[in-house]
Length: 284
Image (cartoon, rainbow, N blue to C red; front, side):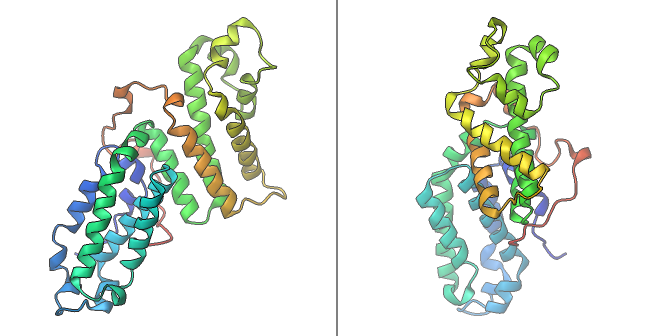
C-alpha cells in the first residue's frame, strides 16, 4: 500500500504533540530511511525517485508543519530559521547529491528539535485538548489561505479561554451576568472605568494588564472577519492575529487549568465524533 502523508495527524500537530513529542515522531519516521528507494540507486540520490517517494514527502510535510508550529509558539528564532533552511535544502535532491548529505541534514534537524522541544512542550501544555484543536484549525485555515476563517478560529479560542477564566473565578456571577456577553462586552468588564462595583473586583483582576490592548485588537479583527464589509483580512493581518492569539493562549498567567485537566487522553480521538474532514496543507 502506498504511504500517504498523515494529514489527520499533521493538521492536528499541536494536539498530537500533547501525547507524543515530535522527537519521537521524527525518529519513527526516519528509522528505515536508508532503505528508501531514492537511496538505493547507487551513490547519488535518484532525484526523480526522491521527489516522488511518499516516505520522503511525508517526512518533509511533518518537518515543515513542526517548524510552523514552533514559530507561532515563539520558540528560539535562530533554531526556527535553521529548521526552515534545512527543510528547504531537503526539498532539492540535486543540492543534497548523496545519502550522507541527506542524512546530515536530517541529523541536524533532529538536534534542533531536541534543543527546542522542552521549551515547546511547556507552551503546548498550557492549552487543553480542545484549545489546541482550535488553534490547529486556525493554522490549517491560514496555510490554506483562508485568512478570515483563521482569524475567527484563533480569536474564538481566546474568547473561550476568557470565559473559562471568568467562570472559574465566580461561576454564579458569570451565569447571572456574563453568560450571554459577546467578546466585545467581556472586554469591557476589564476596563478600569467600568464595572466598578465590589462584586466585580475579583473578575477584573483575572486579566494581566499586558493582554488588555491585545484582546481588544483581536476582537476588532474578528468583527472584521465575521462581517467583512470593506475591511480586507490579508495574510499579514491573519498572521499577526495568530501570533497574538498564541501569545495569549500559551501564557501561564491566562491558563487556569490544573495539570490533570491538561493531560490529553488521545490525539485525534477527542471529539472525534464532531471532527470535520481535514484540509490538506497547501505546502504539501
